[in-house]
Length: 113
Length: 134
Image 1: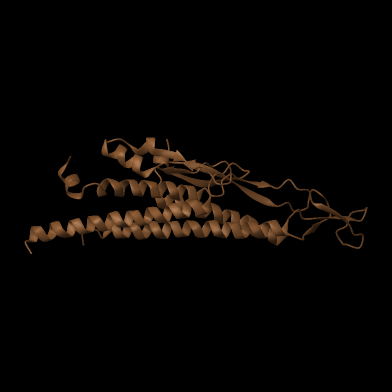
Image 2: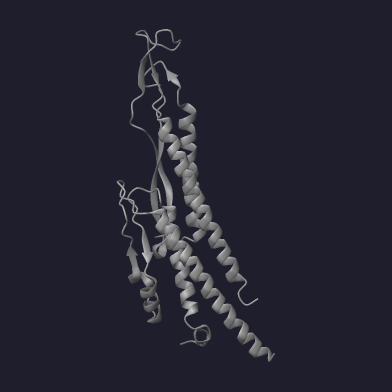
């Protein structure tokens, strides 16, 4: 494990994955009116497990199962996507504040305050 | 090769696509109720056809593939007093469903708003990340 990973623990990886998931959810929202588009999402816990083993999260990408399929073959449901997006943004922010705390304590230790 | 799409590309292009859709709706509504002396000359509603643009790492955005004319036929109306009427006294009204266009307009504006919201959230998170450690 490189020293910087030891410093930030799982949150550096988590932040990267959260960003990728945010892109994917943004893609779903962008394609909300495209006929035939199949919504996708990253299963976060599997993706994190894969990242821990040094693998790309491709194997953790899943197709969304719609609550009610629409006639044009589009499986984006805005309520679902918006909820997932909000949850993901909040998780991103919490990872960020963990990192912030870590950086703060290391800085204090370095300064000897 | 799949392009590398940032979240700004994804939402930005989706906003452009929705804007094209809004423009077609505006054109259709503006031409609703126009009358022509021939069937071929009557206005037909235009509709954009959206297409997914796939990017790297599962990202995808949307683009307008083409703009099609609706297949609904113009309505023939017998009105001999109309200045545009042909020799049989018929005129053709534009093939525009105003109610459907209004619904389309509301849906478009909702999709546009959603993309703006995504962009605003992403921008906020990125700025927060930039301030990390300060």
